[in-house]
Image (cartoon, rainbow, N blue to C red; front, side, top):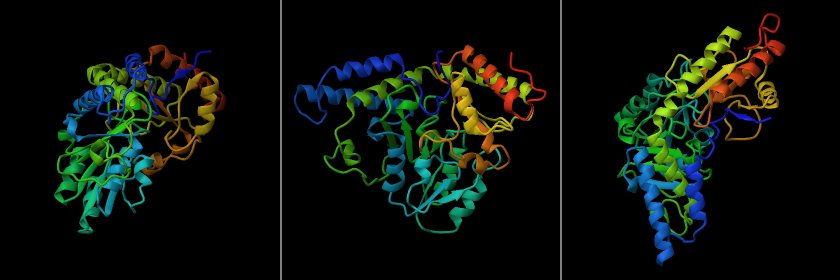
Length: 373
């Protein structure tokens, strides 16, 4: 039985053209810091990729610092910016929430959107220079945050603004200027690139202190020999993402069809964030009477891979801080279904069949529920 993959927000399969570009690089040799011909060739490839990544977010290549992924990019932004006061939304990724900076949490509403008035009130409480960090799109619910509005509030109070755009990059169109962000984090493996490579983009004039020191690579902001093959794969994935945004937008039709059929099967299902603008590929839904871990395991046995909560902190299914921050019931019964470039209509049909069958057997409506057609 072929396993159907519906967990693209955790990581999306590497696109064939990306794998080919990475393989070509691995077949050659060269350290970008070396001055001989092989080194110069590697350097040129890295700088070409830097241009591709910059183009995806409307930045200049000189603003792009390559990292080991989104987590390191977030940490470099939060800990390297020199601000002693950090304000973050209550639904941020763990790599932002665990920053050892005594971060102040800003609440969200029932649809998971940042409460802007609460952000403003918190900034008014102190004159200590601050950094505000708000993600562009949530990894669990797909909810898109009012980032430009939050950035404007932050700047009005003299704060820097960081945006974790890891989950949004390659799925929706945006650029650094429109977001009004001083710092922006993205990662390759969420858009069909390889794991283990990301980037922090910073506006000119925003000074950062390196967390990783040594040879002075990446303009002194991230020492260590560059992950050349990963960076080239990142660049190719960014190029393809820029060209294929319409294809990702089309995923909304499949997501909406999935949600409509689930509502027919189980009218009491909650879709977290459904009242807000969301990424086109993401649905976070409950099955009343069945806990998240049971659903993930049962669907896995049925040949379908989905997740519950963030896949970035451990291999265990844990209570979601995101869903708890949104309030209401159902967090313990929620799973995330996320589509991607390799998803097919047939995948959705098979998910509905398996989900409906599980609900009929174990869900709150098992007495009257009919399996999905």
